Length: 511
Image (cartoon, rainbow, N blue to C red):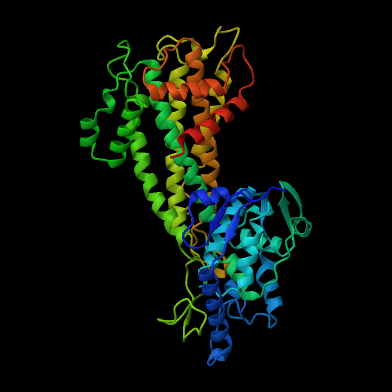
């Protein structure tokens, strides 16, 4: 089994880098301040439930039914109330979510619980943290969440696996969860009703998938910016479309910033003087398109940052003012029932992210189409084949990119406003944030493959007669591609080459 190579503290908000690292074993640290917060929250929960006035105070999930059945009494035994929380949520269907999404979601859940507002036991946080030192990942079906009372069904599967029920992955192998826990050296979680409800009543799957999708789209955005520059240089295009004054009066900060980045990448380059006065929009309008994407992604950045730093649960337990985070007393405190598990911000953000992804995909596909077309690519052979007819160059890759774009477009229909009432109209309006986030994550993966396809085309163009880039930074990118990928001569299957190029671009594009 792999051993942890990284450390993530629970002292502050997480970021996309931490969520990426959660795919592999890592050390999650729970400091004394976090332990004090969790202990204080647990004492407050018990005080409000069993202290003065507790008999007349209802706390959702502790002694009640769930959802539309909140008006009925729950089970009196705490362990039975845990089962009461989880059993009915075992209704998910479909393929398993990627283990890296599940582990990222559980890292978010751990961080949320560690804020001490959920009333969970300290052992829950400690044991969740311990899981990350292993490769254990619950098997969670994709379909079943409406993203309203949190990601109830997917998080219930994750929680059950941590209890040794259902299935899980260990070292990439799917097996009964109890066997996976034993092999990983982990003990099954023992929970009461409050613990179980707190584990499922949050938007952690939605937030994790949105954050990972955003991270991937941002990498693709940086990649496409660099590839647009390489295309410009290989073809010898005039760079007047990047003029700083031109973009300044356009009035959009994203275009100004992207234009500046492209000018820096093309610094030292020399136009060929043989291109048309005005390039097709896929080149000439690249800073405006990429700039608009940058402005939209900045909005998604803010939503994701808020979700990564927030607490999504219901109910929440707030100590009285002045109580502090120490271990002495909890003051009067209060329990508040509300809707912080409602994933509407992420749903809107994921919808916007899907729209951005679709237009970035359009740009990549159109640039590749320009590159393989001898009428527009400066006289390079059709399909960039070294011997057209005998060989077919990038023809298969272009067909695949057309399919990728069609799939991304199909998935870009907004989800966050397609509410359907459910749960006896308890959940009478829902955001469908989980579906929006997972859809955005799928599309981001396809966008990465589109970038890899375009990169492969640029590498092949240099092989079949395009000029060597004149800008040093463009030469650097082309040389990296040429070192990683041999020319297509003769024809060969190119699926793995596209993936190699996509991975190279992600490394190249990381800030």
